[in-house]
Length: 165
Image (cartoon, rainbow, N blue to C red; front, top):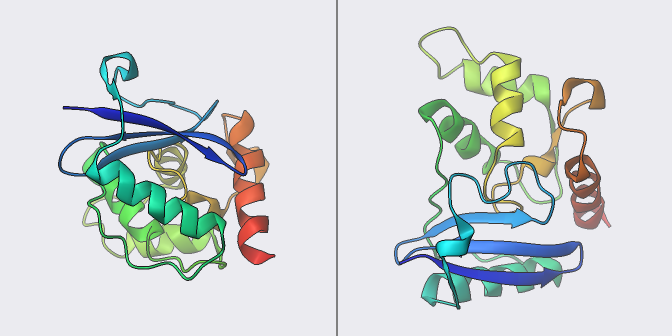
């Protein structure tokens, strides 16, 4: 069963999507690929054990409390390459940033074919289905490198500023 819940954050509504095993998505309204591969209309509008844990984590994040380790499974849907990029994003500590070039070096070091093409990495960052928890906002990408100039850049800047303040 799919569970959907709208979390009212300080930066706007975040739609959470989970199943009985883990978190599938956390999208800001207007985010690129909102809903990802899922038909959100088919999800049940209710909280679940996973959603409750995510809400607790987000409450602590926005209250700037020390974050406990994530005690729920993250289950972003994507290619093996995207999964690799998203795992690397999770290693960036709260309040810190890395450059796109540094992320590319980290990804390339693990790839056996072709390295980590910058455009593919940007695509994975832009298509991250679990906002905040998989922190793509901690990667510094120049605006001329991003195709989707929607609300995403503004949210990423606001999240970085929030963590630094």
